[in-house]
Picture 1 (spheres, one colour):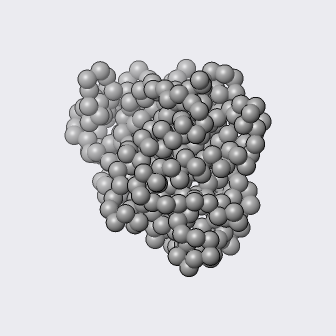
Picture 2: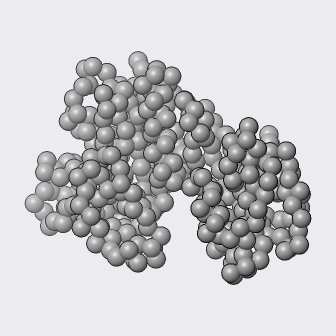
Picture 3: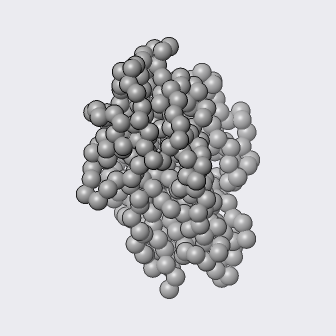
Length: 361
């Protein structure tokens, strides 16, 4: 029996999720790993499938900006879909065997995994032929409502994208769009239907088991993720606020970044953040936990090297003199817009934005 490795990433920035799909897909294509199921949450974002109509985004750009919701175009099927915290997103990266070379069967199988999961909570769900996804209620009923969106992509029987199951999702965000272009029906969540919050990890367990059963795969344990920290160091306030950027030496990539580093054995994230800040800048001070933890893949290595990172921030006086460590060959104090433009990775940019809000920069 072939294996299924289930990765539970927690929060993943949407563009980092696309990179994860790409790297896992290439590794699967080359036979460097077995089938994988990536389980994660995205920050608030509207994704447009290949058949999407921009008119199905009904909110103004100003409202989207005020609510922190972004827009992203994808290569999956379907129309407009919302992703956000409390929603379990699953990306099956499967190389379908010859006996499963049937696109409709694949979609039905993904739907069946969700239907079985919901049944464990006493929720009777099903499909509606004219509309994609998993639904509660009957097709012609006025209370028919979608609980899970399905949008898949297949290339030479290698799958990507997948499903978005509303567990504890913030449902008012669906008012920003016409979900999947369907005006005749509503949207719901497990929390709304059950009248209580539902532990996401519990749902992940059930989804993983049903994917293994439906696709006849043996569950395998993933390797633990590498744990890292990033620290945004700021000085000044208001228009005078500045962010410290460090340039990695050419042999280490040559790009600009904030303070970053790995956790040492037995070290907690806050301890690692304070240590890395001292080692890379010479500053000893307390760090502020930004409550930002996300996962991503490092570089373009196949199979990917997987990282879970915690974000922190700190302040220093205007006269602090930076003493660079061995990893960097230059530093600059720049304003926040310049920092956001220079930083090459979404997670680092998010760390800077959160630091500005928390520290009042």
